[in-house]
Image (cartoon, rainbow, N blue to C red; front, side, top):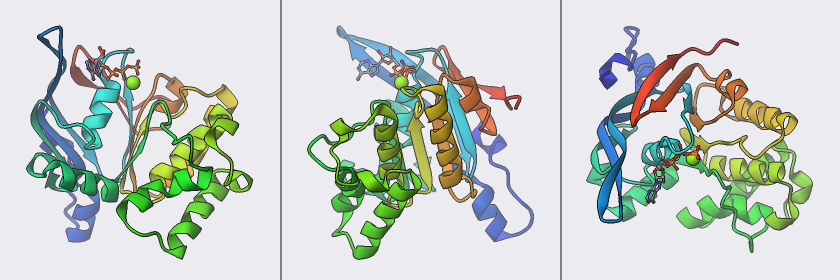
Length: 249
Ligand SMILES: Nc1ncnc2c1ncn2[C@@H]1O[C@H](COP(=O)(O)OP(=O)(O)OP(=O)(O)O)[C@@H](O)[C@H]1O
Ligand SMILES: [Mg+2]
């Protein structure tokens, strides 16, 4: 299925059009890894368009390529062949430095294994994307503290990650991914390490922080209740994406 069929174009004028068209477009994307001197294709000729402001769940068996696809969507990893466009920018046209810079401005990523920096405090972890981009202002710091307040961690800003529970670390990772107000948030199994109750809290938080339609959310999950909160569900099967339709509530 070509991307044009997903990109819903409004007839009501430029503003609507700008908010409705695809934020992310993958065209003929392939990703393979070489293993023991042989190429193994994980993703094969994918065409995928993700509308601005939408919430998309990505399902698939372990090893099917969810994390691989999220890295491509987030511009962390280049495709082996094909093109990835985010907000109209073809990432392949950027060199690595420019691609990193672009990603820092436009994309927030919550990694499957959190990737918090152990020697930095909670607040320093959340400030990291800003620190890497520019000298943080007082407003940047206020925003980081406010995000930590909304994630229920206001009283832990000076703690080191190792002192936090899994759910708390997950929430720090979420705050860090959002501190620079990215239009695209990519979350790799954001509830994967959490008990059911904490998972619901993190999903509520994701809804609260992404639910205004201004941000586009793509998350990988094994959880049906997590997928049910998204308006679109896609599944990776044998290296291809399938639309899994709208989940039942
Ligand atoms: N850097 C790499 N080098 C070689 N193979 C890799 C690399 N990264 C991923 N793979 C392979 O690609 C396939 C897809 O991996 P990926 O991590 O995307 O799966 P996943 O769907 O996210 O799985 P899970 O649900 O377990 O997180 C796996 O077979 C994995 O071994
Ligand atoms: Mg994964």
